[in-house]
Image (cartoon, rainbow, N blue to C red):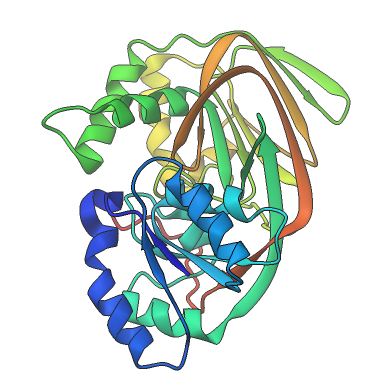
Length: 299
């Protein structure tokens, strides 16, 4: 079952349909295509696909589409897959799916299955990453729209706008029975290594080790943050004194006020965030291309 978000990637996902159909029609596979009608429609479409007996459900869109489909599949035996159809395709990259749609279709048909870890926070599941604080504020600003800017230009504008307006708040972070009280710029919780379309925030993350990879960016001056933040795109920030890296099975975050949280393209708000992980909790389809160290094509 292919679940297509027609507005993902500013229409990129929808533009893939002719080649998608051409490749699939040449094979002996039974398939259906569903076009989503709005936010969270992919959750119900995925649930329906499970009821209808589909073995593999493919997200044609970005990471937000993947997350909705994931939340419709949890608890079933269906396999999650994705192709590069959005602005940010970090999950598709993490599971080694080719960017070229013809190559991706060939990999989908080989059905290489892998069990990877499944995260949960605020009653919602995720399979790649969550960011709290500065980066989530940037994502929220971009999602609200920055006319006439789009894509990379809008993101860069939002980064620098947020640099001058974001104020870190007090957090109490609990990991391995140890409590940290600090005012970090951001807290990233990862199963996969990257978020935001190629920011390798936890570059050494392993998808099936039963552990979250954590990056806490401690408070720093605006000038230092502007200088160091681009290092995240290549995972070169981990040697900074302000970048505190951990690997833990669960983490609890309490903040002095509600903060934005970006979860694979979705923006949530909360001040009590309890992250739990189920090892090997989701079956996914993997591709044949090694994307290690590569950023999303829009960068």
